[in-house]
Amino acid sequence: MIIVYTTFPDWKSAEETIKKLLEEKLIACANLREHKAFYWWEGRLEEGNEVGALLKTKVELWKSVRERLKELHPYRVPAIIRIDVDNVNAEYLNWLLEVLR
Image 1 (cartoon, helix red, strand yellow):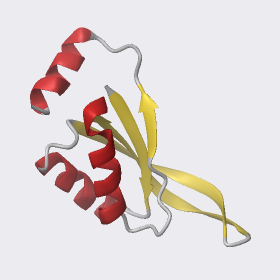
Image 2: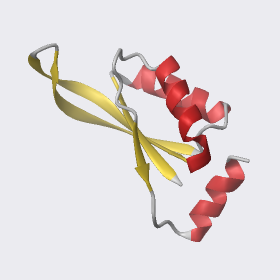
Image 3: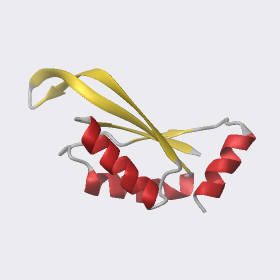
């Protein structure tokens, strides 16, 4: 299992993208949370609100999720970060693998 972390500029783009990934069976579920972001962009320090997304999927789908996110993402340079999960309870992992068959 892996978690893919990315951020979106707003709820609408986050929800639309997540729903497409779910419909395409590339992710089993996602969690969204609004947060304040601070970052460098084109030589300037920026800040604003973003929606962070934790996307849960299996290792075998990593490349497909990454490529699909690049296609769907509204940002020109999106953060698409893979987090490997070493430990997860068996019931949850079994559910995730069943969903992503």
